[in-house]
Each structure stands twice: as structure tokens, then as C-alpha cells.
Image 1: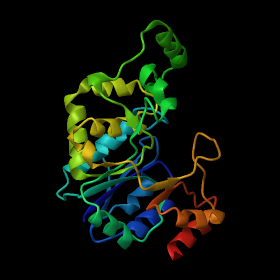
Image 2 (image 1 turned 90 degrees about the horizontal axis):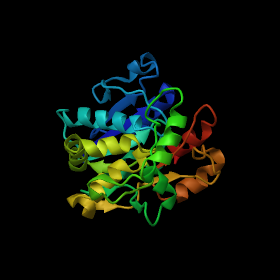
Image 3 (image 1 turned 30 degrees about the vertical axis):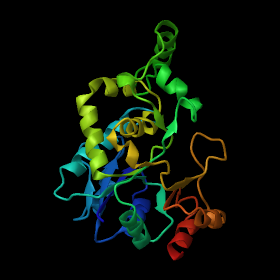
Image 4 (image 1 turned 120 degrees about the horizontal axis):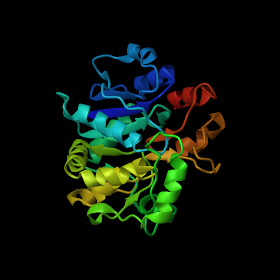
Length: 277
């Protein structure tokens, strides 16, 4: 069961190194996309036979399509690798495993050909996301006055409709899917430029586009509405809770393979405790 861990990062190379060391396995490789806005030099020491730094980097902005583009660029480099992967696991640099590496590989070996990603219906189950696909958003464009332009666009232009009669689903950006699923997604975006243009005007498109493309394909049967991550949004902030040592029992009892988010500068004891577990 060969796994490619695709990790999106912008800071904290030491924490990234720790994550890589924890997930190291003879059948695992790592592909690291460092935000183009960040200096890549502090990350260069990580490069090795099993750790590749993505060459076609993107400047990533929160909520913008640039996150999708960074992921797609990374997918493309993974696909042209000489290695073929059973699963591709999308992580952030602030994720961390809750299970041992052997348990993780065994899980995917016992659950082949699945797409572990959220598939909540935007129309019925995740209605707070409806404005994302009906209104115009210029989060992918960095120019002065874009919010005012966005406001007038939504006043004057008709509501947007999903292209290609797609049914929109999603929720979390992070997922684990097969190499076949990744190939299909990349091909679909290449062949359907209208879909890319639509999501370039969608806020938080990274939480919808990949899930929606697979859901509206022959691979819908492979999809499991579980991204195998424990993420705590209880604080009501734009970002999830940063876990600390007091959260250890909750994390262990979650039954998930991974969790986010962690910051060793805030609390490294939780990472040490998870290593011992």
C-alpha cells in the first residue's frame, strides 16, 4: 500500500520535519508545497529520496482558488513521478497522526479504492455554503478595491449557477483519495475550463471543488463521508482550535487517523504525548 503524503505548508519547517518523521514508512513518500510567499530555503534540508519539494509553487491566500491551484500543481507533479500511489493523503503542516504509521498503512490496505472526504450537500446539509456558489467572490484576485467591485457585481449580475449541472458537496479541505481519483480530478479540470473559472470566483473553493468533481462522476460509489481527521471548531473562530496537552484524551478517543491543528511553539507536549501513545 504505497502512500503519497501531500503537505501544504508556509512556515514551521521543524514541525514539518517532525510530521514527516512520524509518518515515515518504506511505502510512503512526501511531497511538500511551500507557499510561494514563504522563503523556501529553511525547508531545503528536508529534501531526500522520499521527500520532494513541489517545483510549481503558488502564492496561497486564505479562501482563494490559489489553494486549489497549489493542490492541483502538486497533484500533477505526483502523477508524473515514477512511483504509482494507491492513496494520496492531503495534509497541512499543522496536522499530526493519532495512530501509528503501521496502523495507518494497514487501515488503507484494508480499505482500498475509497475516497475519504466530506460530501455534505450544499443545498440541504451545509446551507451556510450556498452563498459561495451563488455569489461572486474575488478572493483570488489581489487588487485594491476588490471588495467594492465584488459588492457591485453581486448587486447587478444574476445569481451564479453550478456549471455542467454539478451537484455541489463538500465541507473540509483535507482528504485521502486514490491515485485514480486524483488522475480523474486533474483531467476533469483540464478538460472543463468553465468549472475552473467558476471556482476561481468561489470563496473557499478548496472545500468544495474536489469533492464535487468526484461526487458527480462514476467514482461517487467510492466516496466515504469521513475525511479521517479530528478537527475542533467549537471555539467559533475562522480557524479550528489549536490542540494542547489537555486535549490528549479527546484526541485518542476520537478514533480518527489524523487531527489538526497543532503548533509546537504553543504546546509541544501534546505532540510528545501523541508520539508516546
